Length: 139
Image (cartoon, rainbow, N blue to C red):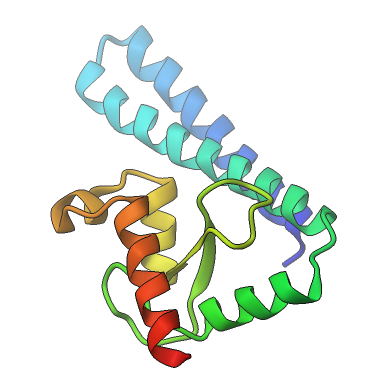
């Protein structure tokens, strides 16, 4: 699926939930409206991730940055230790040396509700520390 289709999908989901939210509010069914607000936020988070991905791809990476990203992707998840390959979560966009190795679930959860992270009492700096520790073990 192309990035454009991901973007269109998330906007469609947000639009559908917005219409349902409007309907629930008109009928004063606020308990069900909460779930639609959550779904809208998740969909918009997906749109933001898509925008970040497009921006990320637009910046040329040096050979050193590419090698670092490949090394991080070869690590297990820094949060739940799921086996590689991992996704590279950028703590700050366009800073390729401050990336965290995350499995798809932990990465999606970071951009969503962060529930898994809260349960494990881990933040981005803890995960970065674990990523660096694992990289040092490889060296």
